[in-house]
Length: 328
Ligand code: SD4
Image 1: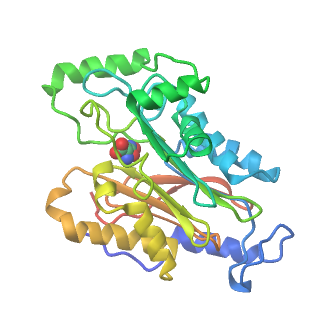
Image 2: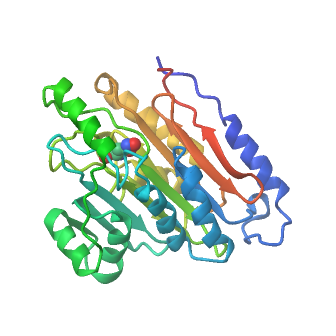
């Protein structure tokens, strides 16, 4: 059953209180007086943000650009063999291949993406090169690999022993049925730097044991990530087919444009998706985080269990449980 949603969860209230306390701090942005925000801010999905956010934070604290921060932050997780949903160590598809998806977007609407990319540990950096060095937004598969190699990225085996063993177990038990359950820890990371530039990045190995060639929401601008510097940004994790279906991240930014807070926008979109698709969401998880220009943040999921990492000047790096629509 859907849970009743309180207007304004505790985390948001706690955060807004923090914003109020910082209104006179020296490194403030000149927003309206009720929403002056101390910068920078970093928000990312899951507890892997506890590793990623501090790296992004260091760049932002030295007056760096949010684009460099989001890229550097998620690269930490791409490098981590213990994270089995992203980059090196990610779980393979049902044919045993690690295939990666990522996208990145800056404060001016520039964006780049790669999908179904193999053998390259840092798809987020390839996505950035697509953005900066090609006339295109997205490269996939063999073409993305060729581009990455031409840019000097090394070709590597990304299947760790731990992931290979998990794959062997899955082969034994699953009868080759493509998985519909996301393994968690896809990282979407949003940041606003001291100059008020909002940028975002999202990177994943996608659903574990997916069909070969399957691409989720994470590399799709508007689904897994969207940034509009005039309004804010959103990013997603969970069952990517659902986020693609509702153009999730772009819809959240549009709702913020209509005046909703990031929290309200995340809640509304998930409620709409549930009303629309409730009979087909069995076993599926859908989660969003969002950030607006005023420095407010929001997070919401279809089912319990989603957590995110928020970094602010006062709060440090905090892991927070997101509220959910359903109770299981
Ligand atoms: C996907 N959204 O490929 C990703 C999976 C995910 O945590 O987020 N896992 O559908």
